[in-house]
Length: 163
Image (cartoon, rainbow, N blue to C red; front, top):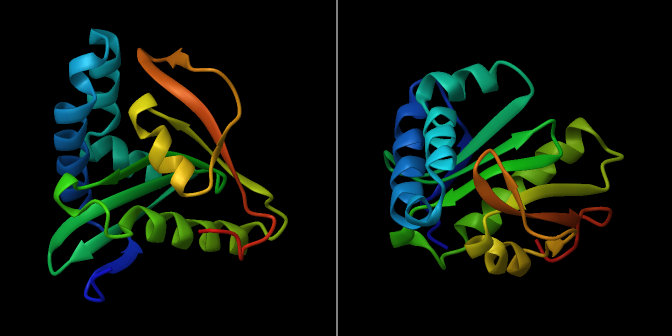
């Protein structure tokens, strides 16, 4: 991984670059096979104002940045559930998703030392990525808000796991 990439909490103003990366990735990779309802709901969810609203409640977001470009985003709800994990397609395979998950897990464990697992609802095409990060499927594919999702979980009872 490039040592110049910084992994940090999202700062005021970063929500626009984060939303743009998420939008571009979703538009290119997920939207073509998603329902109209799923696309509409997701686009509403990733608006910069919606991101800010969530950050004022029970969510936090970390980003991977190289100079001034956002390369990756992770959003966590309740310090226990990944609601988004996105890496710029040109930067995949460089360990960015792994480091985003690792730093998020450390943050969550500091907030809740007894936390045993981090969950996620993966898009079907992202299941192999989550599996490489150590997540396992915990149920069958389902549809939520117009998107197909696979429930997954990462055992973090031993922080020295494969993250």
